Length: 106
Image (cartoon, rainbow, N blue to C red; front, top):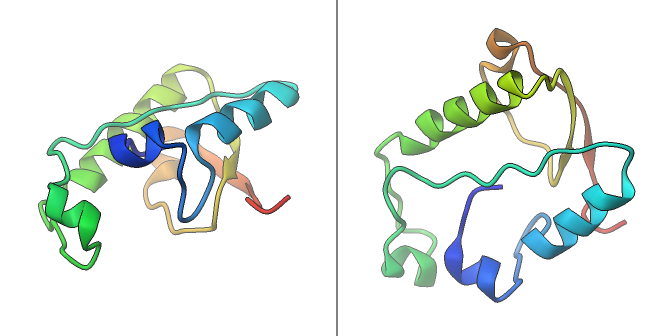
């Protein structure tokens, strides 16, 4: 989960699971990991108001790499991702494989 302080505190999610519902879903599973990632640079307030404003610093790629390394270090191999399908490049280099995306509407 990529941290978004405003949405996390308000338990709001425009797409995907919010923190509370994700933790409840994981608690029902046989096993699971919740990984909260923080961007290297904070999203400006303007970006929260207008998502069309982009930060092209590449920090997301670095952050995903750190997250992949943490999952690998925890012994995660095959993952079920809570949320919509998306391309996650470079996971095989960390020994990670996405086997399923869990629909947020279930």
